[in-house]
Length: 377
Image 1 (cartoon, rainbow, N blue to C red):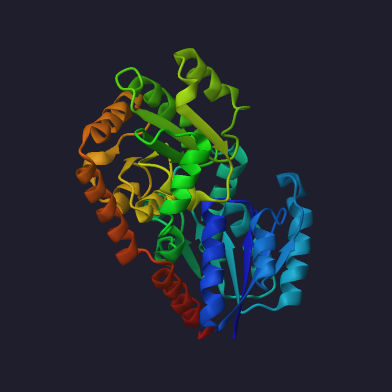
Image 2 (tube, helix red, strand yellow):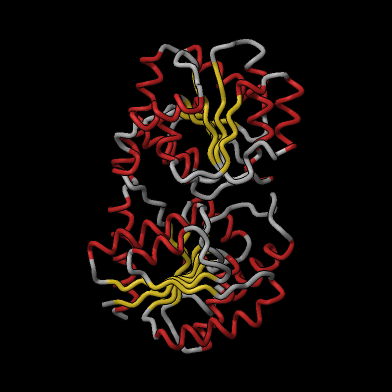
């Protein structure tokens, strides 16, 4: 039994957090690995879910970066107590603290996880500084550095990370979870009052500068000037009636009835199934989970050319430059004007691409191989 301790900044809903959860769940059935999770902050939403499945999850309650030294001391003591074979951290803050703690204990099998690309767009000065420190320490501390995207690997090599230690393992998707949700999707449309003859565009992701929801909303408002058969669903943290930034844009266009701001939800498969077309509008990404989930649902997709989105979607016709509302409106209108058969073909091709290349079973197998290789040294 290989004992792996994961260290992550927190366990609320996010791309890295969900991938960690899926990875652990996939190994619960295959056996051979004992996973333990340490959250530097709180248990969040996902911590209790993992605990209910028998996974040991700890939280160190870090509230600010200034408490880093205290948390480092607690983390070192906890890792020493757990005696892991491998310490696997996820994202910069965790890479730094877990790397230093594990290295100081003489643990050789240290894996760092990189999930982002260009953090100069929306990243804090503290995060940029931590990345610089990690780049310097990458030559000494970790055995392996895992990137979720090829673009992310290239960016981090360019900023000084040890190139020969870097590998790419993409995110994996739970095929069953995003299958056969049409009834739930129809039920949600009825609950929201979405007209049956309306094409629903959907955006999924927390509200933040790097997600650039304003471009999506501006593009949507422009589309509503030329057609009446569309509506827009926004799902994610802080995407609700209290978001004055977006409400002001929507209100000034007089199209409030065409927007459904649902906030954070746990039924993303149903939300996607309730929709007709997916849009990713970020200015930076690593490996965009939500794009893969929309593809797996069988939706035609429009995406900005960020991270590995172009490679994932594999359709240049609907891969556009970021922060261009006019171009996004054009692509939205192109799909809305297209016959349903054409949109269905796009959606079916998208689903097939995820099933054949990005199942969680295949991806978790890559992690299992890596863990076995490191533990065998």
